[in-house]
Image 1 (cartoon, one colour):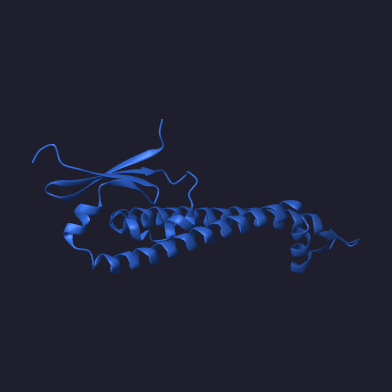
Image 2: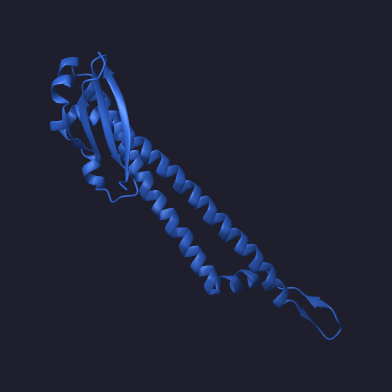
Length: 180
């Protein structure tokens, strides 16, 4: 089964653009996507908003993963602190309890291997989110530039230049409708 989404865009009464989009979970070359291909400028303009949308969805997913990892870490930390407080609580000869200081609890929890592993996992997810955010903001920048360039394109240019090809991980083909 192919990993392709199909999208149809009507360009006018006698022109339809059919796009086959590779799903985003495949390997993609970020640099080639973020670079403007002037030889296929019309196709870039017609397809790039889909890339920006995919990047925005990826960023939303990563924001969610960051929040989930922080929640997981916070729950782990709270439970671990409670266990450590109980373990470090001492009772003297007179039966009086001596509770650990906040600093003692913090130092003990930071020495746990699980603490380090969960903290590193949280940092790695944040780093991945930052990479996606960088891609998203770069894609928005390219989209803005494409929008400015599109103001110089005439309707006839679009019909003559957009025939068939691949750009931004999308296969496109302009076809005439079956019914006029």
